[in-house]
Image 1 (spheres, rainbow, N blue to C red):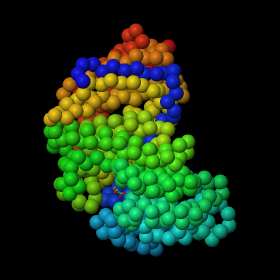
Image 2: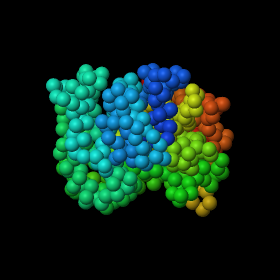
Image 3: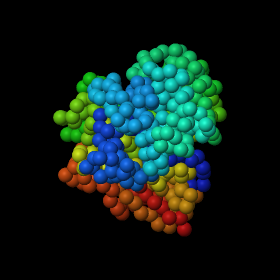
Length: 496
Ligand code: AHR
């Protein structure tokens, strides 16, 4: 389809809340995510607050980070929490089995993670160890963190410096147990889930949301078996979906690409909606009232590691293309807000589609970070249903819709419309009827650049940042927007 995009926003309809938890994050003991990225220790020359990099804490606060998943990932099913408590000099050094067999000093453990969450104002989401741990270990960890009474474990927590228990709401029973978490069948995992979850108790008013390990992408069989067997005993099911547009063993570079790979990645990223739909269908069979949440707790682009960085560290640059991928994915999560309770982009610092990259005491905010900052206006706002007919963006005999759009109204009554135009070359004009929105003024911000692989560097950390946008106007109950090519936009409408 060619021509203008046309749409209608239904400001008089309630499309449900866009939970801020759709804007969640993930930090694993992998490469330089935790050590160097988040945690440098109090004696470091890098400015820090009780061992956490001050620049990272400030940057994450600025995007109102709602939650943080930890300690993995694959790492979670080989993590033994007792290694990471008590005096630093007595914590054992362990081999990080999954990620380069490097030594983990365990300097960052349960206290460091949960205190970081408090500092950030983020809800912790802990992934428990099913693959190599025991039900007893999982049981004890929850008591250690959340029990307020006079037990040996609660007193051990106190002796380690934390008097009051933490609140830990989100608890994953394993990670990718179909793969790095134990190579299990869904039948075997379901039995283990039932066993482990039985010992995940609630203490001292702490309410648990237990999350069962869900499928790899659109693996319908995994979802079906797990839902049938544990659907009555879980509050969540996870889903992991990465975008590669390349074979696993020959991934694409994160920068230095032309339009072919621009198109390939953005088109493939739409596949997450297929995976969501398949998983939702299986959840609906067992849970038609949608009580169980879908947790898309790993998603994003996965590229070749940067030259000079170790392969196991998964350190990659992040370009304008990733910003658009993020914007479109977040829009898809908005659309499925009746089932998706949380989504966590992988990962927060220095790993995969990161928010932030660091080098020594330098840091940069990636284009993806800027989308999370621009889209903050959608946090906990009411989704406004919309219809959209978009022209196609065609390349090499294939096509995809050029525009992706989402709208919400916040508690203060402001309406926000976010727009992604994936077309590499052409602007797209959008004419959008506003039903039930009596808009008197519109203003906006845009993230765009000339180069398809535009990105920030430690030398020029602010090369790509959002700018004011004046290409939107209001006329006769319509919002008219000239969306630049390669752009992410957020518009704010003031109602009269
Ligand atoms: O995010 C990197 C890895 O990807 C995680 O450890 C694992 O869960 C997934 O395969």
